Image (cartoon, rainbow, N blue to C red):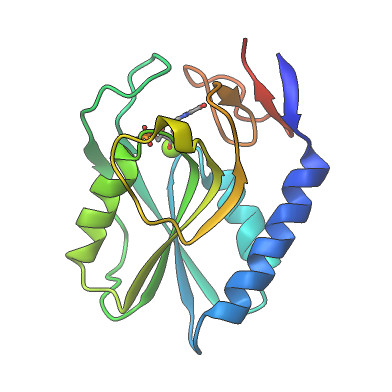
Amino acid sequence: MHVLISEERIQARIRELGAQIDADYPEGPVYLVAVLKGACFFLADLARAMKRPTRIDFIGISSYGKGRSTSGEVKLTKDLDASVEGADVLIVEDIIDSGITLSYLIHVLEQRKPRSLGVVALLDKPERRVRPVQVSYVGFEIPDSFVVGYGLDYAEDYRNLRDICVLE
Ligand code: IMP
Ligand code: MG
């Protein structure tokens, strides 16, 4: 295992993303919707990097089994607590790989009639994309390797690493 993106670089980039989102959004709260479980750490840091009012909520999606690549099957395991109708919603994702999870989630949330629906992903593996998705903000583009840490797991392990590491 080796460090791909250090804690310092992650935090510096999140401060930039927070400032950019603050500047881009109109008046009113931004509804940050984190995808469980991997995006929780990113949500916590991103929300605190923003100065404008935010609301937070969580949605559970499962597409992965215990392996390293998507099963292609996606299901909702936990829904939002509150309605997002008329709200500015920003989906907070840890990583976009095939894009299957995210395109499903966008489809689900569009039906809730938000005023706007954006996506912020800490990591993006563009080479792996199967389903095209529109991502508003990306922290880092990374090559096609399996990463863990800062929320990301391999079979539920390594989420609490402070850096993003490549699992060999
Ligand atoms: P997608 O549906 O293939 O885009 O998969 C997205 C989800 O797969 C992410 O939210 C992660 O939970 C998981 N995932 C994809 N790549 C990695 C990785 O390199 N490490 C850990 N989890 C990953
Ligand atoms: Mg995830």
